[in-house]
Amino acid sequence: MAKEGREPRNREGRMSLGEHLVELRKRLIYAAIGLAIGLVGGFLAVDWVWDMLREPINALQLQGRNATLTYGAITEAFDLRIQIALFIAVVISAPIWLYQVWAFLAPGLNRKEKLYGVGFLAAAVPLFLAGVYAAWSVLPNIVRLMSTFQPSEDAFFLSARLYIDFSVKLMLAVGVGFVMPVVLVMLNFVGIIRGKTILKGWRVAILIIVLFAALTTPAADLWSMFLLAVPMVLLYFIAVGIAMLHDRRVDKRRAAEFAEYGVDLSAPDLSELADDDTPTARPTQPREANTDT
Image (cartoon, rainbow, N blue to C red; front, side):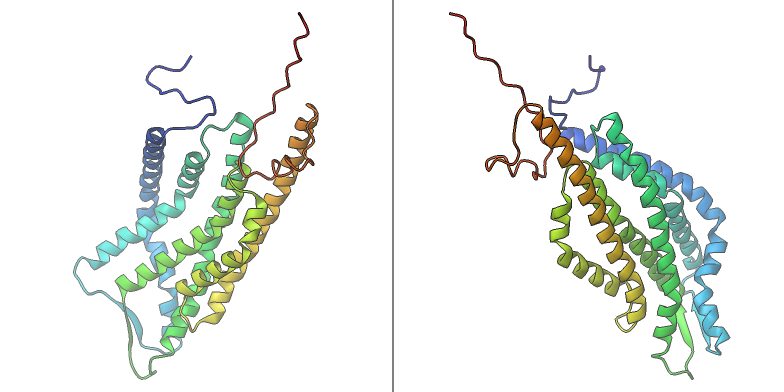
């Protein structure tokens, strides 16, 4: 019996538009709570992260360049502390909001399928952190390259607001980019998309990855773009391989289920059934003809 106050789902387990909106609101609230908890730790680690973000500027000073960060408003330093604290909170609360993404995209799963969420978090969180670290690794190269276009006799004054904004957006964008292959695997495991479909779009995927790496790094910094694009391409093809292995296992299990009822999937009219992107319902056993007169 359904609990009071909860709208029952239909027999196929699908949710209505209203239920999806309620689920989205619930997941956003949980993610916001996690972000608020991470914000406490963010304020405690602001000075340490700020010193790390300032390292590329310090490296220019060690090379004899007159480089420094400037603040154009009285409240700018305070605003930047809040921005850095929010960035730290997003990183700290990554397990919470990544799980909310999984929980929203894969509702109504059985107990066994819900274990996929554990694997999703086990892969997505380290990859997100790896993406943040990869962006941080190429940031000094970007700053050093951009400083070479300026005559060495001139001072290299950078707006602190623009510098922190660029650095934070770069690390978050690359972190999310590293998680996208895991999202593709997740969509495959819940039966939304097949591995062959993902593989068919490999040319478009590589183009998108290269454009993404080019947009997040200066056009002249080909090395940094290469360092970002290559891991993302490798992660994409790893995701394709995992998805196709999962599809093969599902197809074998589905073929065995149909064989129990005498259905041959190799028949022309059923050959496409196993390759359908949507989950296939278990076939029903035909009733025996009534011979009673």
